[in-house]
Every structure is written in structure tokens, then in C-alpha cells.
Length: 112
Length: 108
Image (tube, rainbow over all chains, first blue to last red):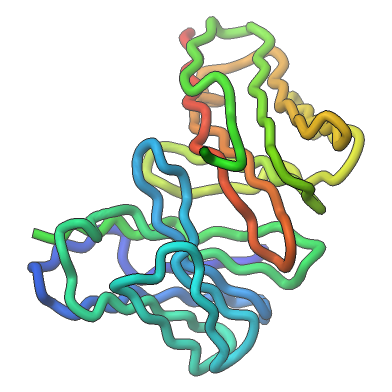
């Protein structure tokens, strides 16, 4: 089975801190995605990547950046965390266009 | 307005009931994905379909491309089916757009 691993289940950070959320998949998938999930809003796409060193902005990229130096790892970076970035963050991967997503278990980030 | 609308938002059922969750979308799509999210956050893929009907155990998913509508049915519901069910549609590229989910509670 494909496994998508997010490094932390729960994280508490202070306003202004730089935050790294890590995601690793073990099945050589080309495509990786970062979403945030908020009550009543569903999943919203932050950034995605179709290949190593490639990144594309999603619907809500402001305040975030990403890094994909290796195929299996896709990192989400909050340059200066703010309280409105308190959310559930979900990473997903997919082998290609005809396939669905495999999700990680999520990181619940609280910014205080 | 969200491009993907799910109904109902919340659903409570007695164990054994037949359950239907609906998903409507407003744009052309290449595929539709039904997902299940349990408390704690993990999301599991249930079905991906682009036409017709798929069945897995007690779960059945149907899609009508002309009407831009899909349904997820659960037969003989069980408390372990309690979860949030999410519909997602794929448009251009490999991006999915997600509904806000239907929260299902099955009471013993």
C-alpha cells in the first residue's frame, strides 16, 4: 500500500515562527499536494508539485511556500506563522492523472 | 459559491438504515472521487469514478455525468460508518476540488 507520512500529528507554534511541515511518500508518485482543511470550507489547495523542484500555486498560497528537492518529499513552509494559519494540514500524493489521491493522516497546527 | 455541493451537511441514522449522500457539481469534470474521513483526520479513498456505478461491500457510488450529480449509498449502515464523507471532482490537470463534506452519525 502507498504510504504518505506527515511528520507531526499535532503542532503548536508561536506567532512569527517559521514552521516546516514535512510530507514523505514511498511509492514514487509524481504529484504531491498540500491542502488545508477548515470547518465549513472543505479542503483548499495551497501548493502542488508535478515533479522534483517544480511547484505551482494553488488557490490559497499566500503566507506559504514549498520545497520539493527530492521526489518523495514535499515540504510546506510557513515563513512567519500567524493565528489565521491555525488549521488541519493534509498532504496528498498521486501517480498521475487517471488516479485518485492518497492522503497523509494530517497535521493539526495551532498558532498562538 | 462552491463548485461542489454536498447534501445533507449532517445526517443521523439508525443502525441498519439505507443512507444516501448526494454530490452536485457545476462544471465539466473528468472524474469524481468519494473519500471518507474519520475523527482524527485521516482521509481514505473510497471510489473514483467517471461514469456508471461502482460497488464495494456495503458502499455503492453512482454518477450521472449529464446531470452533474453523484450519490454515495451505504446499505445496512453500522456505527463504524460514522465519519465525514467528502466528494471531490477533477477538472483540468490533476487537481481535485472538494465539497465541504457530509457528517454521518449512525446510532446503534
